[in-house]
Length: 76
Image (tube, rainbow, N blue to C red; front, side):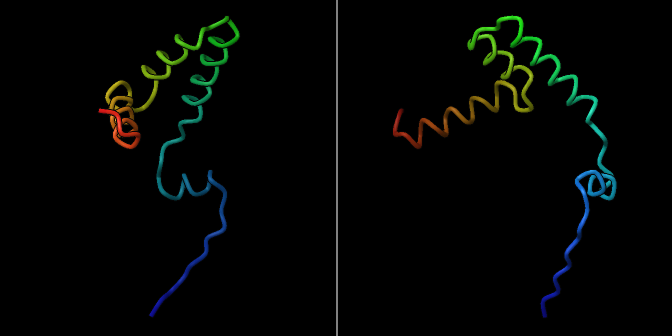
């Protein structure tokens, strides 16, 4: 037997229903800092470094992706 339930709700309603915190102020602050950095004339190298430091996976996650991409492309 298979039962399917369709739920029609907004992302905000789903977040509240699941009991997840509202992190929109954190997201807004992050976007504001990124926008300021780009508008102040940031170079691509600075942007990459900032993304590594601010990203949820930081340097360890970036290393994991680099190793995976190297393996997929045949680099050793």
